[in-house]
Image 1 (cartoon, rainbow, N blue to C red):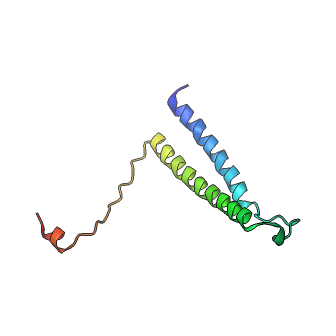
Image 2 (tube, one colour; image 1 turned 90 degrees about the horizontal axis):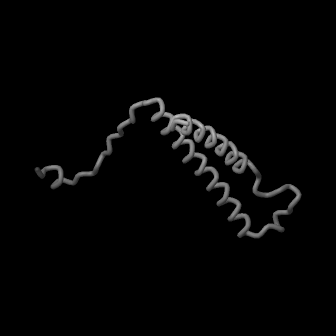
Image 3 (spheres, rainbow, N blue to C red; image 1 turned 180 degrees about the vertical axis):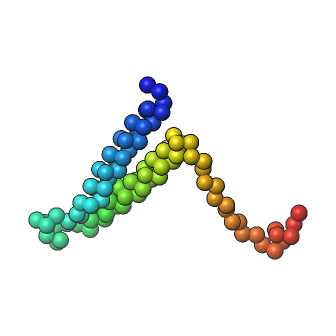
Length: 94
């Protein structure tokens, strides 16, 4: 197998992983059959943190998928200009 085919397979696997992370993010924290008073604050906090992690992981994976697809399609990278703060002395120095 050549590396381009392997990268395409990895991209497809990553897309499936993102779909699974979306399922996790959509799932409710509190089940309807449970009463709010039965769940401790720690468990709610952990569940919310898990959902947050799933969402951020999905975005990170999507960004990496886009980067890899751009490399496979030989699309040039976008160069972003970084504006740096210069004080009076830094701007006048040579």
